[in-house]
View 1 (tube, one colour):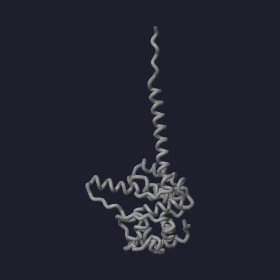
View 2: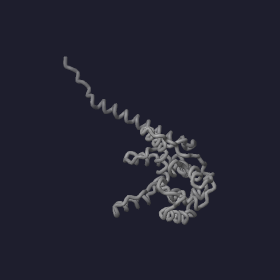
View 3: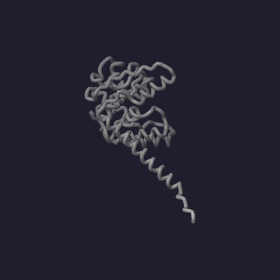
View 4: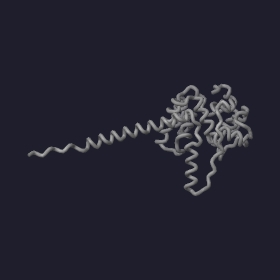
Length: 237
């Protein structure tokens, strides 16, 4: 009797691998969409950046003191601070869908012509990075940043994104968010910030651990002047 030829195993393995990859992709989509959808309505008690800092300090067996953090609804944050953030960080925030193509093109030209790297991150991108991702530089993280940026633009809307940004941004050692920063630096609520105080707070965001709104150097003072000049052009979200 002639032997029955065995079915090749390679196509079967490839089929199983493809099916496993499809299941993993589906699970990833479901989990990440739920992550973003939930925070449309729920204020996060902590961000991934804070968890990362806590983990690093514990590994080093060092004490960790969580940053001062008081959630403030956007309607209770000074309109001056809201406009100042847009003026300094993302003037086309209300117009783009998470990615400012104008700034991206400028950054690409700077790299090609001057070999100088400049940032092109929008408020949406910064928020996605702070809330969901580890503060490490890598190509996979940049890809995830773009993915989460698209999701929060889709699920949250501009007002919620700005609210999340102002409440989670790093404002110096031991300070997270607008309310904690206002109380730390000016001893008042973020609702009571005047235009100059708002501009001073936002002017230090490029490096809040080195720059100070209470002792502004020439760089910060220059940013404050530019922010104050542009604030009235920004929409109130």
